[in-house]
Image (cartoon, rainbow, N blue to C red; front, side):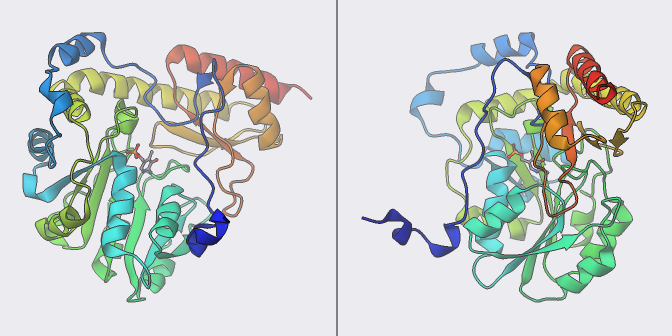
Length: 356
Ligand SMILES: *Cc1c(COP(=O)(O)O)cnc(C)c1O
């Protein structure tokens, strides 16, 4: 039997997501929070577990958590939907508003999952190049958005892997002139950039997407959307009923209940980012792109491949293969680690750029 013949034709060229191939390295490749979950909260978390969390299905809406998100965002629970990470929400948005005959619009370079979920859901996609400093050219973008089949646009701000945020005025002008939905992915909003959450009340086509992954819960998979109640209701029809497990809902609530502890970690990451950026800028041949996120995009005079390997030999893993077609083939992305981790990275990078 030829399984290749049975698979959907449009999925044949996809490849599985890269597994974690390295152990015993300083992991600066995945934009995770380098600080572990505060020890005092782990205790609280474990003592809050009851047996029912295991034998009963989770709350399909996640009402406890949604109430807390509503409170911090100034919206109503009816304006919020939870996802198994924002990855699931990207797919849910495309299942609901994309699909065959529709198109997603993606300013590139950006997060790779917008394109991958477009392919998986049979949604067409239009990649719109950003300008030389990775800003969005709203004129070029709006030309594509005039296509009535362009139902969903993804704007990451701050953007991954470039690190820059889009000005609110630019996003507003795009939202104002678009027929379709504009999804503003605020995965890194705690590290910089201005939230566009206030646009929701003014424009019915705005969707804000956020995640707990970059601030400390990458392992538990919790993301959410804020949008008009009408949009949320459509998404609820398509959402898997039990997409976020009970433990993850509970842990995410605990993050919001103990925000000052996480804010402290975030402040530390931001100040380390600025220190890294300064130190790297001073190294010969290194180009550092300005970042408002928890990572830094950079290039060296040496090949990215060689810098990546050199760092790995020194025990530090950064991210390569950021996109061959969007001018990033010689760029690397380093996630801000703890002060100690960053010092090792800086030392290894310095010795690589100084050697022949
Ligand atoms: C990491 C990332 C996500 C995915 O977050 P999860 O909630 O872990 O699925 C979404 N958008 C951007 C831009 C990201 O970098």
